[in-house]
Image (tube, rainbow, N blue to C red; front, side, top):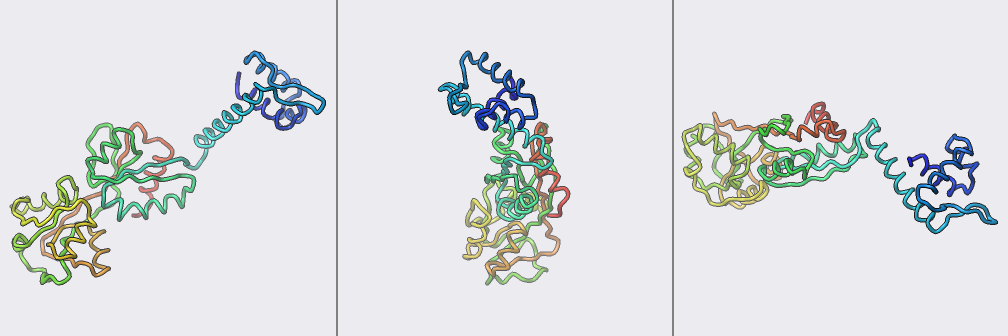
Length: 294
């Protein structure tokens, strides 16, 4: 039993002729006859019969014909995917909030423009949860704000992102010479503790001799957009990605507070399991990010 037997059987049914099937498959007519006979022997039944109008399927032959078509279609699709020069299939991307909202949409648009046979799906959560998805094989790649140190994970830096302090439009803060310590007198709106943005901000506080308990926290939000909305409403000031801050400023929702000596940045990384690094779709996505400026 092999796929050639099934192809011969399907072609005979479709053409209703052993001769025509042989011509289409570029083999001799006796070879087609032998392949059909081998199928009959394997299934211990006749799959085809002759009548006054020519060749037709037996009742069991109808079952065999339907399933043979399905098997051949699956095999052809498998060959198309594995032997194609271009990647095709599904790419599931896990991402934390900032990459999913401000970075990935443009990247994915350009990627699928280059590789239209790839279907992308994005899953969004906090960095900690996203890493779990990758380890559990729920996603193919992840984009987060830190390199993953798990030995089973490969990480590649893709873009550097600065953090900015934002304030309500009517805030009096505009002088770059204001001292960092004066920020501690204001109300703050922060991301949740698991957020990478918050982690970077806490590290900056520590470098300047403070900690998160030094702040007057008016609220804690689960997304960057919620933080911006809270600042816009006058709840307090906050720290967000430049990607988010600049968009909010362009819509006249908030303003950026500039302070001398205050520089906060982090790098976004794409990560995948090392065992999947040669997967055609994943490999193409990694190469695309290396080759294209984000």
